[in-house]
Length: 417
Ligand SMILES: *Cc1c(COP(=O)(O)O)cnc(C)c1O
Image (tube, rainbow, N blue to C red; front, side, top):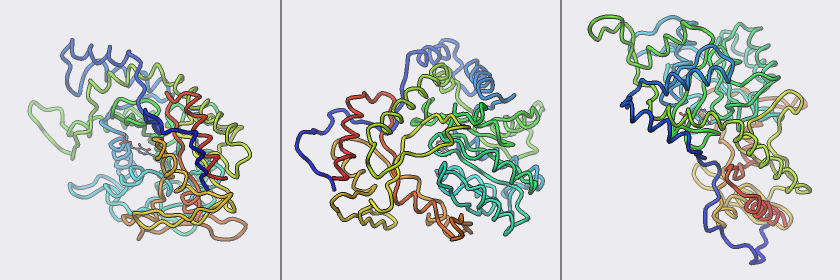
């Protein structure tokens, strides 16, 4: 229960969850686009960011698109076309087919399956990384052996159990779409996320670890796939003297202005990761002794990008909390707290936090879809719902000062008094 001792004043300047951090190089490349009058969806900035990102992630090709959602859509469409053949206009490549998806994630991860007419089957989360559970995925293949596509995300910049997931998918001959929108720069066994899937996607949305204000990329080692996605993203024009179309297209290409911002940001990716890591470590130290844990990762094999620091309250330290579809309430209890209390208290001090992503199988949009739970000690569970109930994202802005973070830590501590 929060104890206000009147010695903490609300921040005059809001402490953000994760806001853009510009350095100057971004403006230089935007100006370059203006100077050369490449104010369009082509130009040197686009070519350069595609080259820099592909090199960084260790894939042969990166295709610059308008957003991460567009990258996921075209990745999913391409996977569907490979598995089930070309779709007719107005009919997605996944029409009538089931697809396994991460359950606890941002809705963009799974909307692509619906864009292509597929039927999502949500796979439960595991506690070790808060990502898709390989055990639940294996069970899902027992229930739906016909499935050939799995869409996975790396939540909050922490790599999923990639080796286990890949082994399950290989055993069942399934392809992987890898949503690395939140995990740009994170590594698993020394290799960058975004390079593990058969098709990868990243995002440069405004609150990601680096940003172009918007933007995203499709990642692949296949020239043919890169060419196809680039063509789809520019309305599928055929090589002809006029606008000739054999295939349905989209207007998904990245702008050369936005590419200029990203070109400037890429040189600061490692610096941002180091700052986010320091924030995570300070929370870990500062919140010691409380009945909480930070979002966990595989210390041996993973180097997260620490995009957001999150915490999970121990079950027996939770005060009663109720959530309807649109509202949250709680009952204060001495010595206990809950995400709603912590988030409301942080907001009073002009600090932005956020609930954990509400699992997709609990969303009104998708709650009719099948959900395959994980099993803990032989008991069927719903780990996503549990992490959603007990977890929250702490402010993780790389411009937050140590003094500001110490106040945030003190506010959280007082919630447990
Ligand atoms: C941000 C995000 C996306 C979408 O990226 P946009 O660039 O905003 O379209 C997709 N998946 C996850 C997990 C995200 O966090």
